[in-house]
Length: 187
Image (tube, rainbow, N blue to C red; front, side, top):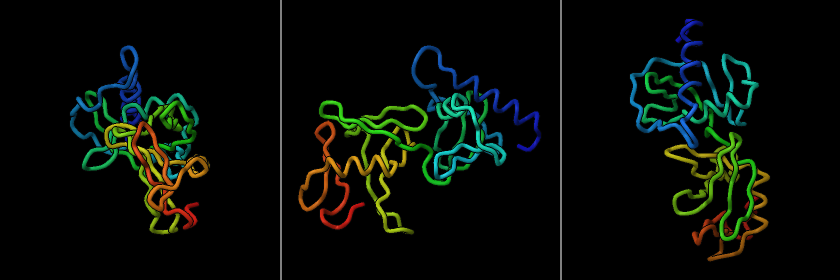
């Protein structure tokens, strides 16, 4: 999609579809339009949304786009009832930027304003980054969309973790989530 008028129409359609009737997220899982092409939007590894090489400076617009984001077998896309536009994502589409303990749950907030309670439906997974050897934690947000847990948030979890079966572990909603081997320099 290289025609500027097509891009403007596509962005306007995405923004309109992202305005859900009432509360909640648009039902992107029910929309199956034809693929219309690519749009020059990139979500960088640091969570910054870029359009044509420049950061999208309006948080409201980023939030709007995030509500019509979907991951299909062919990659990430913005979806409306009538259009599907492919975008690029360097790592994961969201960042978990805060966490707080609420009763028996750890509640994460993403950089686009989603709140996610870690538990059976929203697992927290810690893998090792193959390039750096460092922990690469992520939490499930919705559908096949995940948030990379910010380093400072991970430090909070490590600080609160208990040792279970030789692993630093947190529990949320009764579910154990291992953060890494105890005494192995998890952070």
